[in-house]
Image (cartoon, rainbow, N blue to C red; front, side, top):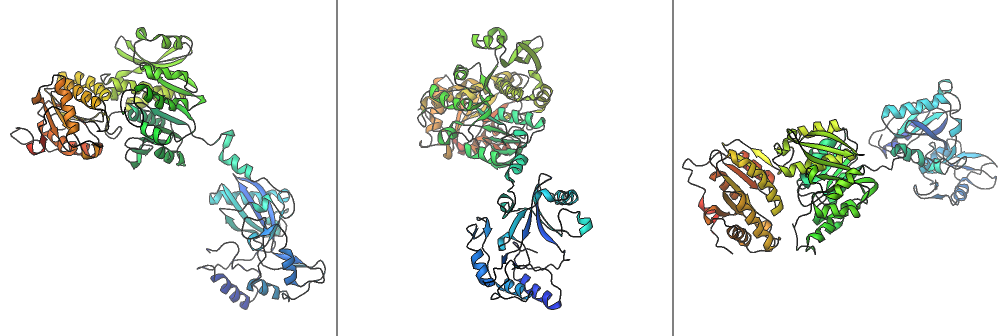
Length: 638
């Protein structure tokens, strides 16, 4: 039952002794022994690929042909001198090995290894015709009767195999088996091809071609569309928006992001997965229809890209983050790194560029494929290059002022098409979260360039929210404690400025704003101070935090000290500032400080732990006198 290559298989057992002997032979190779009805006839291997019979070989058991002078043993030795014969499956034919089975089979014909067959006499050495035991194959593809071919095709279909080797025994393959008797004795899920590629006699069959035709239908090359997204800020949200749109369009989407690897929204790997290794996981996944890959700076500098070319590449923006690391000292250096994504766009693809960012729009000179811009600027404020691009029939996705607010408009071939109101997209907070409006424009541009219908794009974006389930760590809102809490991953000054614009819109409905702010220690001193200055202009109460894993070579307290220095230099009163370490305690302090109708903004690293902490918060002490002072460091400026 669990054997292979015909080992231990014997046929034509006509007496009790033969059956007992056959049983002993079989159980040396299998834990379970099968006794089957015996079909009389020749052994045929029918190869079915993609529901079609593509080759048929009649297999003849290992044998020798007498010359009237040589013994059977000598004839075997002569046969094995054939250069086509060797060990295993790498050779066209396999060497014939003499064993107990050969000797027993000869005895059934009153022969021994010393017997001298007559000239031209064919002496079979084994009962089965496996090539692995020395058998030979003759091509009979053109001789199969249609009824027999139909039976073979149906067998492969019933078992559920795209590629199957059907072992078919019958006296004459050119006649219907219904007339001659016989039938299928085995269906092989991994059939060998050598008997068809290089038969012992007859025509060789190119069975590789139908396999490739099956795998790559319609002339396709087997690649899936690749969407690559880079930029300083907004990559994760844009990637998730785009994935949501593509999934709504019926595709199975593989997504890499800073929070993990996802297949159709289900996370299969956690952590920062915005590098090439994570992208390869998606590209190796058999069921994925499209790949949406977040391409971060570190991964590109460390390993390059996970692909040789992408179908659609996008650069969202270039801001001064991570400068001074890995030889990237200026924004121009950083732009050169990020431009690799659009330079890798194939000729038939699209490069999506932010027309409002001078470093990004300048990439149009070297970007691959065709150019599609996106812009937040109203039509009257368009830069000259964008105005010319649209006038010449180029493609662009823009936010434009309307009578009732803001519209998203697609420009193409000299025409303008209204897509939807910005207010219809929940993630934009009725347009107040301008950075998510920009992310939406980029996602729309990428989806439109992939020929996703406008109705599908519109419907998907109206469903996309900043909930923790849709977009963990990106503007997640919780209103369960009498005050509003926002959890976000603004980790550089530009990201915090963008978040600050939204907070300024929200302030009107809240008493105070409390902000938890941090920045990794490998940023430049000036960047850390700027982060503190930006925070001072946004929040009424600021909690600066630093974690041991974010020190990155700095002494404890240095990061929080630089943040505080930046805030003080920007005119922030010292009483508005606290420094807390580590993140868990810092989140707790912010939540304890909050009163009814306050707005708490937490920019955190461990998004999942912080979100659980927020949703599980049980409320402050009745006195509301403030946080546990044991977690707070009072740091002097500098």
